[in-house]
Length: 201
Image 1 (cartoon, rainbow, N blue to C red):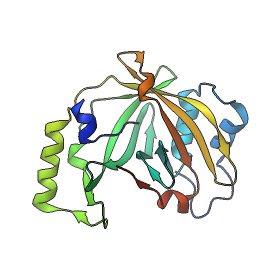
Image 2 (cartoon, helix red, strand yellow):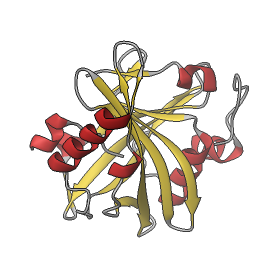
Image 3 (cartoon, rainbow, N blue to C red):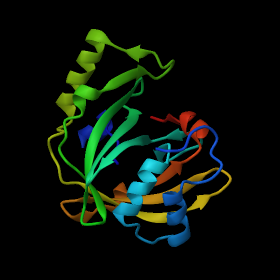
């Protein structure tokens, strides 16, 4: 869904090398033309089918990424990863809710306790007091209790060889579309390719 970083604060079914899209994802490919709004139920199938959602991809790096973990009714759990700073990457588990057959929306879920962090140069885990201090820094910069922003998705296309699907994510604040916050999302269905993705700062 969204990327969390200092700059912003200032303002599952495939394995191994994929041979084909899962049935729900293939159905989206077959049914939707570029630019067509994808109902959130169909988006849910893509969430669970893809290995990773990569936002605003550049080469083999993402601005931020999601791995969708579970859909229970209208509730969605996902792991979001992105750079927190030029030196640190973070991952955390957050929640969203499907709404009106169209959107996934923020819930105000406090994801800060779930934060894991890694040094960007070498991937070394940050632990103990250093991790605790980072969580306090994040909590000071970001109010996770605010709910309301919602997102919908337009179909873009697919690449059979790369095993990807592209969507445009549109963000709504207080019900109003914010075009400047639109993001192109590349859904990776090949696990090896998905696992090889990193994040740019």
